[in-house]
Image (tube, rainbow over all chains, first blue to last red; front, side):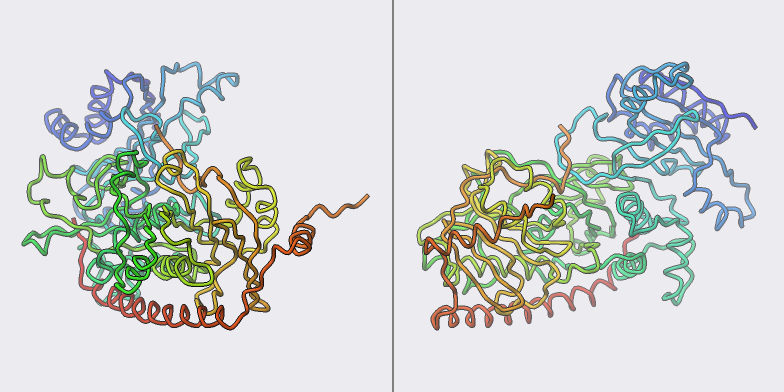
Length: 511
Length: 65
């Protein structure tokens, strides 16, 4: 069967897709139009007006074919097995570009991803990866991965976050979230493998007392179990348990460049929504948001009192109220929303999504990150207020805490021209584990220019917080503090760090 | 030709000669460290309860939408 390949500009994409839906998915004209406007239009509408598209059909999509062979083909009714793939380019392209070696680099530069249209009406949007560069509106920092594909027989790659809609039978929001997350991790890190819907179902079948298809959704523990089986060291955080620290902890992991599985519900308000989605980044805070940030109030009142007694005001970056970026299988990729109103983008068309709250999140940590965010943050907050390392009385400090790999951190530090050379040398030549917790100390004014004047580095593999064991180094207020884990020896050097430009390697900026 | 290009030891030696190094091992320092130990024990206890309760209640939240 020959493959039909069509090039289309943005103004003509609707007609080109409608023809594909009629010919390949054999939908009647009126149904195709309705489905396009209800379920497809928004995905293309958010793309730049200069975008060009290559439509290829029939296309064998590995994710849908997996669902087809493991489920749809076993039904009595006829289900089609072929999909349509729409590849996206930022600017005009020509058919001849795909047969001219001198145009390959140009094609790669213009390539902005793809969207698969599978024959699972009404949820036609299948596996997709879109570079945020091609969005009409963008101002966020997110995690991305490079995904390889071919367009008209030419190998290309795109930087983005994997996305798909649920088909409602083999994958609900929960399975889609697992798939998307593993697609991200497997393309980004060699330690992980991508998973197909049938693998997720088989994995959960081992611990389920009921069949897994047709999907009835998953509970949070099942999502966490599946991710753990796929090699991740998951942790679950509940809003009702972590209270006022909940959003702060979520922010801390996002600033660490870790995509987080989020559960949003409105059952507490009499609704019936329980939805899984991914949080993958946030919008950079504005100066007004920084100015509006109030002094940190700790869950532990005695800690608040310690700060008050010394008149030290601590502002926490992770308490900022900026919008976060979500991968939601009911919406186009990269949806911005505030953590306190996670379903705001549903409300214009779906009032029954009102009053949704984020009630849980699951963090897919690297297995050897034994020191998680709650304890790491508490260690830093207490280290800064306890003798002999306490901050000066009457000081005002802005702190940003995040997890990162020591490789990325040292790579950034080695070429950071703003760092004091002696402190840089001491840090670079300090032995570190694969992952470290970093606390950058600054002020509201310094952080507005992306600068800091203090730093604390903790060993993320050290879960024992006694005797300052997690401390690797700290440098602030003219002191450089080191901890030797073999001898438990703590040394304080009179060595000033000065101002330096802050670390920004965990998330990628799109403006 | 081989050359040692690490400089930490030289920097530390220089700071020690200039009297800019302080060992945090005095009695009052250790008292402060013990105090922080106690606080971190309490944090750990608090965290363990929150963590376990999060796990237990997570099994009752079904995500279908």
